[in-house]
Image (cartoon, rainbow, N blue to C red):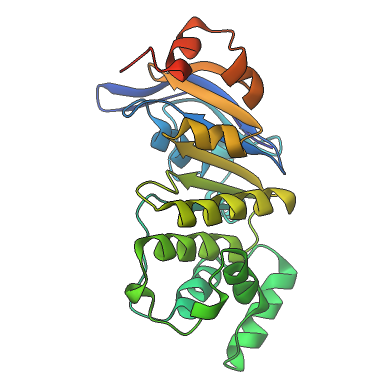
Length: 254
């Protein structure tokens, strides 16, 4: 699993995350919910090993990440994918955008690495690319220019790019923010398919209904720390923390 233990982080004099602990197991979806400004994106960046916390421990499969040398951390980081709130695509086809993720991340899987370079050398399309695009419902857009896509389609390409290199963990920052219902449904379906493939998924979201639909466990972040972390049904139906109860019912507004 990937685990944060008593993690805090500050930007200058401002503490953004304070004493936070949570974990993501393989094959489960963890939703991180809470109002704006409580540090959800910072939590994801720490989980993705992009950001070293000011205090606390980040571990992956029992290894304390920030005690390792840079090469060892890079090997661990390759096992984690992240999809940001804003899709970032370059001026090329959908296929090349997804394949680019494979090239840059240098897949940690020997099988996938060998397949990638043998197929790319022959100007073919890696199977991992076509599978990822099929998963997000874009297999018919392989040759289309990525920047001509709708916002929802672009976000699905970003999702496919992260999936293509077969991460152990996938982190999503508000993946359906401002998307229409169809694209939201397709991304949620892709999240559940990733879970079924054994990938651990962390999703930061403002949408509590989405968290109820897709999450196995839910972390409620209030006041820059975890107010409650437990099974989704318990958090939404029978929360143990008074602040959580008020937040999920809409009574607590930040």
